[in-house]
Amino acid sequence: MQRMGMVIGVKPDMVDTYKRLHAAVWPEILALLADCNIANYTIFLREPENLLFGYYEYHGSDYEADMAKMAANPKNQEWWSFCIPCQAPLDTRQQGEWWAMMEPVFHMD
Image 1 (cartoon, rainbow, N blue to C red):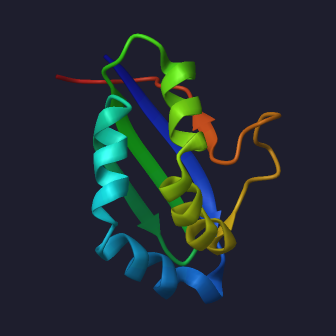
Image 2 (cartoon, rainbow, N blue to C red):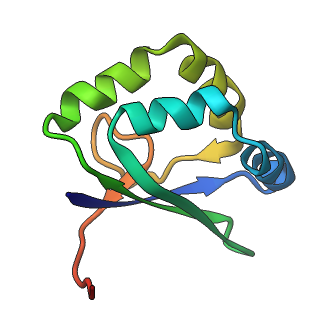
């Protein structure tokens, strides 16, 4: 299992929209996440900085293939069409990232 952490901004005028979207995530998206070997997915919001911190556990054996499968899914692309306009990616993210991935530095079981 891999533990994944990531961060992105949320536009101040879109915080309520983002919260509303995630209060009722579409069942197809939840099923797709599970099908792509993602569990314990949680998104935290820090206001007033308007930062989103995402955490999930990846239980598969081919992360790149699972992420490609997720990105290619038409329902997920529709979901992203609502979420992406709410987000403000960090200028310091790596090439090809939307959410900036974070390095794990501590974990306690």
